[in-house]
Length: 339
Ligand code: MN
Image (cartoon, rainbow, N blue to C red; front, side, top):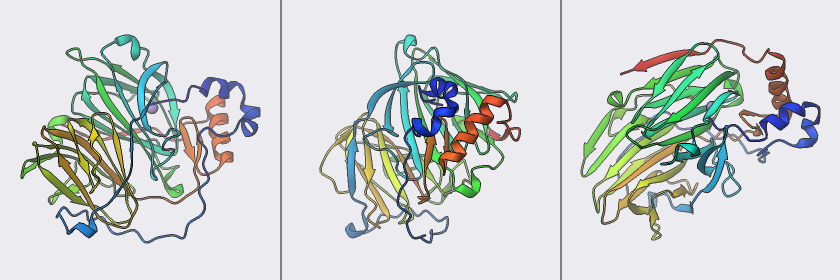
């Protein structure tokens, strides 16, 4: 959804792109390839020495994107540029329509995925290939841009409320130019597991043997919406090499063994310490949080606003194709429209 504010400038400045630099461009050192565990995500709580520590707690930065939508950014900022494979994590929420009414008018994406999850309100979605949809309260959309889509996303309140989340997930080089794809999920179709004071909506991944609604996603991601009753302790195991974060929606609690409280509108980053168990504990009130994990790609990242590729040359190609009308390679499909 978010389009870098410099997009318009960049479009006018295509010949200057190499000098302009790639927005958010990062070239991590090449790491030895690691063997990823298979798809199994277990749920059992383990002994203390398997518990993932907390690297840092991020309050987010206020910013705006699209046509002037005010939002709060947690990943994809100076504080946390990249949590491989997560490129960006935003919350947009406001009681004032002026903060979002201009929305995110038609803009392109290539080389990554956007995951939109609505806590309240809705986003009206459409693209240049004729796909249309509404992501309502509790609904989710997993959009794989692949080789490219041009879409619009327009937030709107419902019952006076608007609160949505968008996560960007990077695609491996081998998947960046795949056919684009939308997967839509209505709230009622998201599996919920209730046990021991925890209510877990499984958007992707697996919890307590129940698979999430979105399956067959590259990188074996976990995306849970977890609500814990006061004082409840919760644990889920992920592959040891996955990166992970928790984002608090309501209440306050602790993550890992960290004594530092994490409260509403803060994001806790789990340290990559080779441990499998992600742990959360609610304080004296109910705690609601998003828990996300994914396999790191360990590839070079070249960012150009809404495009995320491996090299600057690929970013230049995307901008040039967007300008000259050859950007769309394949019609986007809506798959698995559920509920
Ligand atoms: Mn978008």
